[in-house]
Image (cartoon, rainbow, N blue to C red; front, side):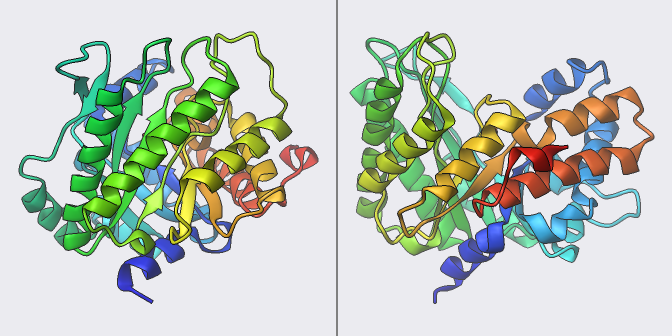
Length: 335
Ligand code: 13P
């Protein structure tokens, strides 16, 4: 088994998933301000350190995606953040893209930047303890979009990123996120997601990526959040499985979904049904940001000294999602 395959499998073994705590300072500021907590480096660190020291980390969280600021911060006990994460048996990872910018040639769409100087940044992150990375391409669905240009350009960037990451002996998370914003149908989401994922793999293969050493982080197949269409969770699970079965090469060790604005319970329930119906050989787990942190953040914001209480709330969500990643979740476990 290759070293990269080994890392990918270790991150996702036994129902473990990924905590996406890699919000940029801008996004984290919005999240903190929405619960009336000032966004200082100290507060960002305190909230994140609280989650990374929670007891569920060892059993449930195989990897944590960090942001540049956090990977360089020290804990209150003067340990490095990546050490704190590896000491509890999880693997530190790092977001390496520098964000989605206007796509020249199709200005209503986005292209993710961050390739310049990436080889050098990767070496630095490896030294800091990172063993996997993340890059997110983002696509909207409208009558005209995503355009062929955005599908091609983002796939190319994801492949060049992945090649540099594997060259540096880390596992790239390949995240093509087809957004749920809009009034599109689930069928539109299915078709566009298939097209986006197929193009990503075409480029990954062209760039000589070891497919056994990546993790795919896709969206689930959902109707747009402004659509009148109401899908059952079972339908979401079946469409998602069908779409991935037809667009993802079988060598991939695992798939870790993003939550993309679903509520915590929806994200857990859909993941559980995906696993209950899973007729593929892929591990199907989670790499959630909001759907793992939302209620913990809300709880913490009411009393930022109550770290144990905050960890309890986080532990519960992490456990529910790890059960869902094995198809063992049920609603009554939420109480
Ligand atoms: P959400 O689960 O909140 O969508 O975040 C996942 C992520 O990492 C987006 O890039």
